[in-house]
Length: 376
Image 1: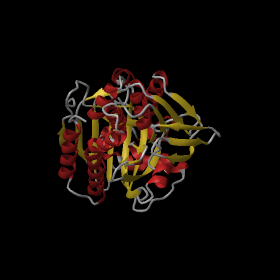
Image 2 (image 1 turned 45 degrees about the vertical axis):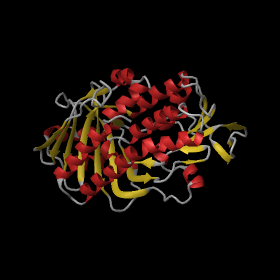
Image 3 (image 1 turned 60 degrees about the vertical axis):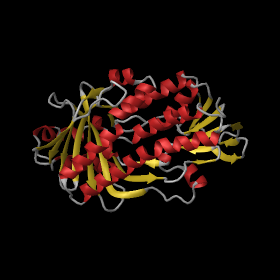
Image 4 (image 1 turned 120 degrees about the vertical axis):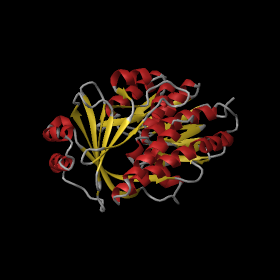
C-alpha cells in the first residue's frame, strides 16, 4: 500500500498532466493547479520519437495521437546543399509496437492530454497556483493564490524550466543556462515528397521538417546566436525566410513564400538547459520534467522524458508504503535517461555551433535514439 493518498500537482504542462493522469488512475486523490486560466499550450509542432509514443501508449493516448497527428518512420539527414548524409532508422521501442517517430501540432497534443486529465477525475483548478508550501514529516501544507489552503501527502512540482519551486527548495541550483543557440519553429504546407523527418545540416544552421498531419508539417531551424537577445516579432517572418534561403533544397526553397503567411505561426525561442544532479525531492515535495531536466530540442525528447517521469513516479509510489524509498527509486530510474537527453542534446548543439563533424552529429543522434528505445 502506498504511503500517499492525496497529491497536488503544480503545473499543467505535459509532465504535470502525465503525473496527474497516472496517479489518478492508480487511485490517488489528485488536485492540479495551473496558473494560466486558459490552460493554453502555445507553439507550432512537436516531434515525437518512439520512446515518447510508447509513453503516450501507456497513458492510453497513442491511438488519438495517430488519429490527430502523423506517425512516420526513419530520419533522413542531409548536408545543407542536399546530399544524403545518413538514414537513421527509428524502429518501435522495446516492449511496444508503436511507430518509431511522429509529429503533431503542439496545441493538439496539449488538448488531448488536458481532456484526458479532466476525464480521469483529476480536480483541475485554473488561474491558481501555490503561494506558500510548508513541509513537515507528516504532510505538505499549501496556501494557494486564491486564498484557500489544503494539506497533501505529496506535492509534485512541474512548473517548468523557470521553476519557482526549484528556486525556493533547491536554491543552490544554477539558473537555466543559455547555450548560444535559438530555435525557430513554423507550420508549413506539407509537400507530397515529405513523408518522414528530414534534416539539412549546414554551418551554424540546421533546418528540419516533420509531418504533423496529412496536409501540414512542422519546420524548425536552429541558429547560432552567441548573445541572448530579444527580436521584434514583426521581423520574424523575414528573418525566418532568410534562414530558409541558406538551404538550396528545392522543397525548402518552394516554401519560402509561406513564411510570410499568418498561418505559419512562427515562433522563436532562445535555448537553455537545466540538469539537477542530486535528489529531486525535498521531503514531501518532488520535482519532475523541465523543473529538473530541461533540454534543448536536438533529440526531440524534452516532452517525452517529462511524460515518462510522470508515469514512473506513479509506478514507484504504489510499490511501497515508504515515501522516501519510492522517491529514491524514482530518481534512480529517471536519472540516466534524463542525463543522456540533456547532455547529448547539449553536445549536438556544440557540434552545430562550432561547425563540428556532421557524421559525429548523426551518430550521437542514432546512439541516443537506440538508448531511449530501451525500457524505462
